[in-house]
Amino acid sequence: DAGITQSPRHKVTETGTPVTLRCHQTENHRYMYWYRQDPGHGLRLIHYSYGVKDTDKGEVSDGYSVSRSKTEDFLLTLESATSSQTSVYFCAISVRQGGLNTEAFFGQGTRLTVV
Amino acid sequence: GQQLNQSPQSMFIQEGEDVSMNCTSSSIFNTWLWYKQDPGEGPVLLIALYKAGELTSNGRLTAQFGITRKDSFLNISASIPSDVGIYFCAGHPSTGTASKLTFGTGTRLQVTL
Image (cartoon, rainbow over all chains, first blue to last red; front, side, top):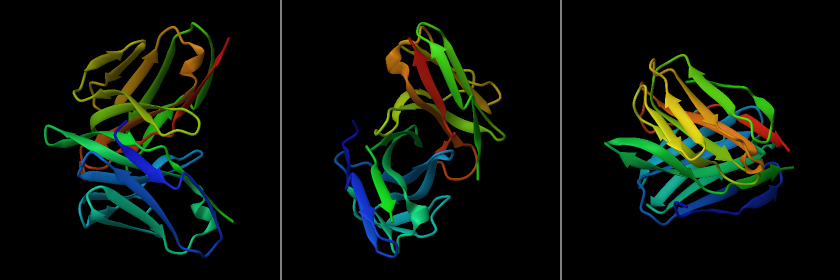
């Protein structure tokens, strides 16, 4: 348990509405990530953060934005939800060893359904 | 982006059998990680590998970092029903940002009694 809490755990929303998912960590890790998981695709990186107000895009960032105003919180926002964004979303933190990011530890996930 | 090919995609085995799965890449990786995911949960780290050729065990699990740095395998000995789940390989590619992990598409393991 790396002290990661995701909220909400489940959400159903309508197409076109904004949605924000929250990831909260208690261990002061610098690096935080948002992934989505879909059948046949494994885990794909949406955005990540390497510090307060420092974020960068992953491989599937279109339609998503993130913010990190505090070390402990990393927010993922769907500005206008679409059905293709129905997925399970995982937050993760990574541990640094020898100057490199190594293991990643995951939250329990948020199941988002866009109808 | 980087791609990891994981095989097999799924497997049925009998309790007590040994299991082997592997992960290959077209490019070099600096680290290899193996995760297990149970239904409704996030992936949990099983084994982390940091050096080419490294062989690491965790109970009945053994994983190796390939010499070419382009592959890794995971073995599970004497499988039991709680081994059921999806196993993912992941790694940090040698090029690009060291922060980003790339994941395979997973191996679904089902155990029959």
